[in-house]
Amino acid sequence: MVSREKILEAAGRVYAKHGFRGATTRLIAAEAGVNEVTLFRTFGSKGALLEAVLEQRSQFSDVSELPNPPQNEEEELTVWIAEHLERVRDLRPMLIQAISELDERPEVADFACRGRDEVHTLLSQYVERLQRLGRADEAADVFAAVTMLISSVMGDAMGRPMVPQSFPPVDEAPRRYVRCFLRSLGVSPPVSRTPSDPTRNE
Amino acid sequence: MVSREKILEAAGRVYAKHGFRGATTRLIAAEAGVNEVTLFRTFGSKGALLEAVLEQRSQFSDVSELPNPPQNEEEELTVWIAEHLERVRDLRPMLIQAISELDERPEVADFACRGRDEVHTLLSQYVERLQRLGRADEAADVFAAVTMLISSVMGDAMGRPMVPQSFPPVDEAPRRYVRCFLRSLGVSPPVSRTPSDPTRNE
DNA sequence: ATGGCAAGCAAGTAGGTACTTGCATACACA
DNA sequence: TGTGTATGCAAGTACCTACTTGCTTGCCAT
Image 1 (cartoon, each protein chain N blue to C red):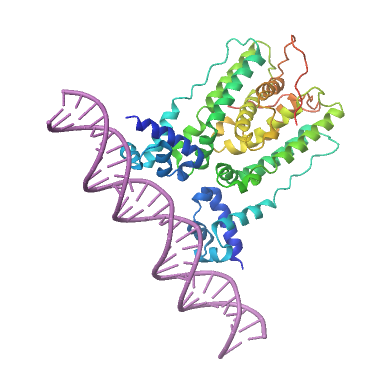
Image 2 (image 1 turned 135 degrees about the vertical axis):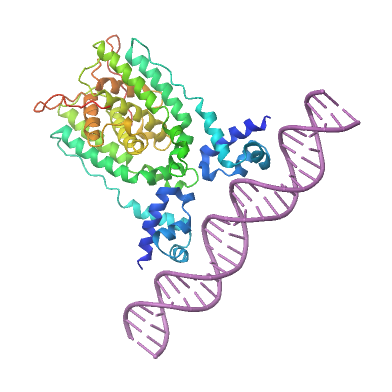
């Protein structure tokens, strides 16, 4: 029964490209290299197929932890944010379609926003640790700063393909976001580094 | 010839809710309180109607200027960002649909990203003025900070309806984003104010 | 060899979609 | 009074959609 997996994969690709409404069963079957009838025999209906795809996709949502205790803030966060950015980039097409059809298919809602809360919590806790260690300003607006960093990652993943000139070069972006983030929290930059290479863009 | 405007308005609403593919001519005609045939007689085709809608929408894109010279950074930016946020919030449904159908309808691309560049430029110029006045750090990563602020506004407008708990209260958000932004640029907060009321959320 | 099972193929059903046509109605202006 | 113009209504065309049915083919274990 290898058709099942071929169809699931193909359906994922086609949904991501055309959305649920635009993903016709013919397209999916063709993309899977499978007869359309096989699709219906295996999943019953187009809606059931969508649910199967979402369920399969739900299993890859593990967000990695941030170091405790913090050691090198900039390095640790840069790696972590780069990882998060890549994850969101991969999800981008499916996310966009899911969001655009939220009203008509509410069952995809938690797929669309899953992870955001978790990332927010992990980041906030990390910054609170920094505060307790006296490495971040006690009076800083942690909540807003974390929100902004996460939005920046989302915005980069979503917007870069459309307006690349509005974002720092892809290999520099995570570090530069993190530096702004840390600075807004009053975290002083590491002393053992050349102090100014935040290469200006444009 | 008042039908034309009724149809244009209705098409905008329906398109924002269901996307181009989901916006059937029947739905649009019903929403406009007009016979479906009138729609075709007036615009010729569904595609032509979409173009008319986009063209009409294009005229409301005027972004207001930022003060020159800067006087009160936090106040000026808060007002300006709040205004921008509201504009994006209004555009949200149409934007989401436009983005999700970019591959199939590339003609809406410039509608989808228009304004972002303009906002970016205005903000950057404002910060450069601050730098020249010695009110912002010369070594700050202006480009990244501006990108982050704009992404935060987009993220707020797009994400708040789905995950409200991930954002500061709607009436505080612009000011708190601006404060983080200014802080990441090394702009010292105004002295004539109570120094810490960045009320924590959650 | 034979039975079971997954899959392909051809055809069909019922409904939705964009779009057209022909005709009736109403109002506006001359 | 007549004439154009905008609109409504009923019906129809051609196509696409999800989904079904009946039959055939190939493979695999017994």
